[in-house]
Length: 350
DNA sequence: AAATTCGCCAACCGCCTACGA
DNA sequence: TTCGTAGGCGGTTGGCGAATT
Image (cartoon, rainbow, N blue to C red):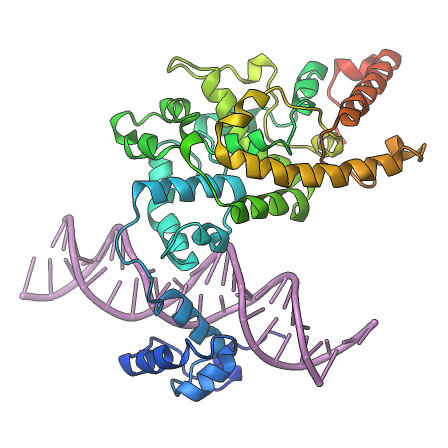
């Protein structure tokens, strides 16, 4: 049974708003923002509450910007989209005078196309060439060393969040001079360091990426910018990077990856970047709070002999204990391979 | 000048969650 | 605890004007 749309259920009108309806809603909305159904009844346009809310929040706002998006706004949208995906309301909060609908429309009509022209996939924010490489390696069994380097990333480290902004406004707006995704990504690294972001966004990023998402999603979203950075740092020339040949593991995940990412990665080696960005201090504060909670959870596990075997509550944290935890896992894995060397010889499909 | 295509963006749809009865 | 409703939010549609043929 399909639920009828609100305009049918509430016997209200569908379609564009006229001037008279706008005027009535402007007069009413500032006083009665909390009850949009009531607003729709009292103002007379006979629009459903959702429509009234949408109209007020998106088009009747006094602070609404009507001019074009600036390169800085473009950059911020792209960076935030790379970090948190299509959470337009959160992205819009960082752009004064812009609404989620504005940002969404701008993304769909302009930025997606712009990124495509640059050879960058708007979903993964990775160059198309790299995506093709990823697909070509689906099903390949990564060598143990590659898996170690994969595990050695600290997905909760603030530098990860910071490094997931691979673009800069200058690079983006000047892209047209090069039209090269490689050079674009390469030159973009680090240029975002001067930007600061308010704590509320950082907190939301943390809560979104670390709490709401399953482990695989978390890794997927946060890994990608790092991948871009590796990509960039490993390719000072315009030639395609040799990522796959350097022990880098593609970001296409099998269930093995999922299990591995449930493990707790140790401290990341990119700590030197932490002090460069003022906002990182705030982010670190948020992250430390979360680490503390995670460490407490781990301490509880210290009394549980089955913790290593159960994996029922993967904690995406990074403490000293976590390092030894991962090492223990890898040791066990190593022992297993010694015991069953055939596992190393051929891929194992499930 | 008419027809067609394209791009923008307001509005709608439907899923999900919070909240109160 | 359950159920109904309102509202938040992301995805999608369709109207309209501009550009092109």
